[in-house]
Length: 181
Image (cartoon, rainbow, N blue to C red):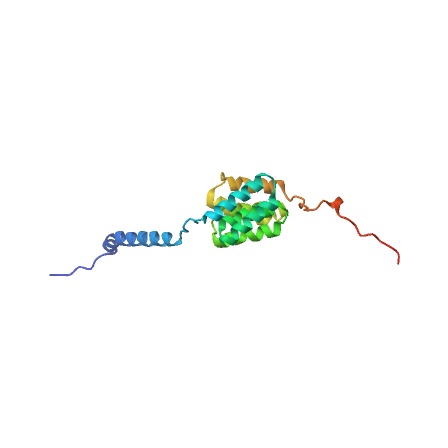
């Protein structure tokens, strides 16, 4: 019996289904291993977050920061707590510290939409519009142009830099008296 060597077309038809099945299996296992499980919060942290949100709603941003910092001591590194703390810190006028918290949250969860949005808004308020646009581009890639975070960052970029918030009224600062010796 004479042996005929298979043609390229025969080899392609034989091995393509196997190659496609293997690539799909590899893609599924790699995507499952890269997904981040949802963060479970300690009940004490949930209570402190509620206290912080209530303080923010009442306009007591310093009280909110205190509650969020307490929550962070109970569950260090929680992205949820870090984002809440960053938002309250931004409202007190400490934008540099707020950016630090947002970036810490992003280091723990790079796809956290609230952290990316908050960082973009804070950067826009500081006047760093190029960096704010980079955050906006990340948001558009992750959730689209009609996402709430995308609209918030777009509005902040349109508003531009805002005047820094002062914790103390400038007129209430006492000046030292000058006396002659």
